[in-house]
Length: 322
Ligand SMILES: NC(=O)c1ccc[n+]([C@@H]2O[C@H](COP(=O)([O-])OP(=O)(O)OC[C@H]3O[C@@H](n4cnc5c(N)ncnc54)[C@H](OP(=O)(O)O)[C@@H]3O)[C@@H](O)[C@H]2O)c1
Picture 1 (tube, rainbow, N blue to C red):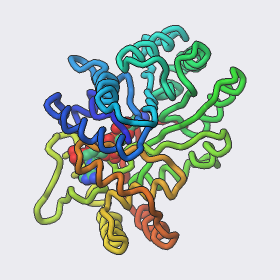
Picture 2 (picture 1 turned 60 degrees about the vertical axis):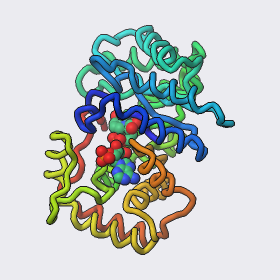
Picture 3 (picture 1 turned 30 degrees about the vertical axis):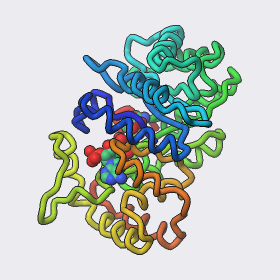
Picture 4 (picture 1 turned 180 degrees about the vertical axis):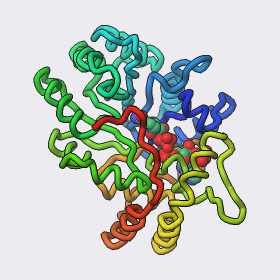
């Protein structure tokens, strides 16, 4: 489950404020008690007055739920800010994350995005830096985020050279990004690239920020999120997604599941590890219900046929590379 509802971007998108912490904790406790161990976060989730808040909360929440047998695994993401231009600055950021989490070692230290598209000279320092994080014993393994197949192959060469284990790569991946994820245009898609370099593919925003849950609509009642940013986004996306949402509804009824559960299970059927954001107990329970069963091939085909016809897909992350 992703724990990342505290970034500036997400405050902007999700209307987060600190009064929600207790209900987020309830969601956290629920998924922990259900056996979930892996939590994705980032040092950039929580800026300005809420600097580092996601990591602080994740550490605090874990100390409050002290009856777990399986240790919490934190996969944090280090932001390639323009001032992080030396390997040492990457190591210092990992140390900062560990201080906020009040932990000794990260499970996975991930580079949040690649700078290849706008500041390629920074990339080498970031790659050496994340390898140094591993060598200094601050993480069990490393990962990358928003890297496409080409950049993934390039960075995995570096990791191989430095004998650093690459555990995960994460990209935006949902039924609303189906065409982008399957047609990379240069031969391999991310699933194949991850297989080639032997890492797991994490699908982030598997519910397309809530759009695939089916609770938002422009039909009749005009139900939209309260935040102006998500409202605007959904107004643009929903008209082209009706076919997909209708299909999700039909499949959900057939399986006796919710649309969210179908959308998350589809990500799992694609061999990815989905990290849905759950902001309260009800959502956490529902999203946990996406596990323990499997969509049949005919339903997968039906969903993908509808997904391939979405006329306005979810926008790509601005930092996504080839
Ligand atoms: N690497 C990156 O650059 C990157 C970028 C984005 C996200 N991520 C990671 O991916 C995680 C998840 O992505 P995300 O939060 O952006 O999008 P998401 O998982 O697609 O959507 C999460 C949102 O959908 C709604 N929701 C979730 N479960 C629901 C349910 N069962 N019923 C109804 N509504 C439900 C909630 O918002 P409402 O209730 O307000 O509708 C929730 O905040 C993040 O926490 C973060 O760790 C990584």
